[in-house]
Length: 269
Image (cartoon, rainbow, N blue to C red):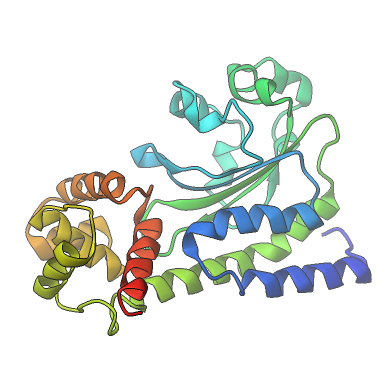
């Protein structure tokens, strides 16, 4: 492990404190990337909720400069060829450099580089994944990118030291979202009353089944658990959830819960 100076330790401690002050789940990825920029300088960063087995990604980039990799028509096919895949998902949470597994010259010859990295003018990467505590097979993926100047062992150490705190801060937000105002006085805690509350207080026009799925999403249940509760297949529960998100104007369960909590809070003022 590379040595961290006392001044850098102070920065890491300050950044760790900032992580636990993040108040909104849907703003968490941007906050992480902006905080990391102060301790690990990079030109382009991503912080995504990703489920490779289902080809699902809720992407967040900082800065959002086109062309964004997740928008590429062949993104998933190309992502499956990433040189770090062999070690990245097998050893979380741990930071890896692209140069750990492939030389820069060899990387420049790959289709992945020419389709996704070259347009952004980056060819160095420091990346780590954190397993999602609520959705089996999903991860929070953090990737930092540079051109020419590779990340150092000091950069790797800094990210490794921060990963447990990033995971802890995110878990705190997830638990608060699942147990917050949806379960309190702001919105009904019973499934039938919840559906009626949604119809009266929100503009989303969800079907009865979608209301039921959203209710159990807010209780922190996985798609498999929701399917078991409602007597439907896991994939059917997932399909209902994927219909809910665009109606609410969100991308995933976490931003759905945060949005619902904001409606609930507004309705009590």
